[in-house]
Length: 241
Image (cartoon, rainbow, N blue to C red):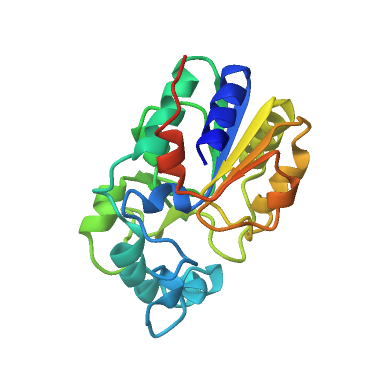
């Protein structure tokens, strides 16, 4: 595995327009639960499966139950950036990293200092009234009970992409544009099983594709470099220069 880390270091040294595309595995090292891992939300017991609770149909029909689950399981506000978040921020500051494309909604990339982050599935840190669009802080949502209501009487909804909802077109276009322009694409902490996000790999035009995930992915055979280790453990060994 040391040879693979050396190769990754060399590729990063030789690149000037890196894009990192990350999934839930980037945040699990910060203590945020994954959906599909053995200890993830999908393997826990609730009255409804998480996939159903986190759907737009469920949100509209039973917002009280949605928010009970959402506050309990999705708002991990004490989580801190790990080695992967921090290294990506350093690479951006050094002018090596073009942007981060993430499926996560926790805001940890920005907390680590990253500036150009495409949040494909939105963020828990943005919440808006569905009626008048007034913004509300995530701390207000976390501290409240029941369904949060706006001063105008409207229901407040997190700016996260629920099942049955489409991705934000401007965010998707920005992510695609950066991936197309990348000379090195590093994909980490994702099984590449969630579409349309997983399909973004097909927009990469470069010849250096790196996949870093604890378990193999369906795309490992397409990668020039595949490393089956936790993303933080790998990027923590990289020197920014």
